Image (cartoon, rainbow, N blue to C red; front, top):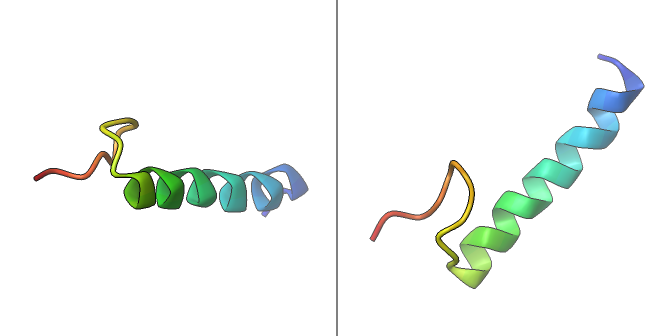
Length: 33
């Protein structure tokens, strides 16, 4: 993997976790309720 990918994946995962934790309807993986 490229160093840029290694740095990018944790940031993207953190954003997804943040969306789920805040329960915000944002992003392609928005929680469906």
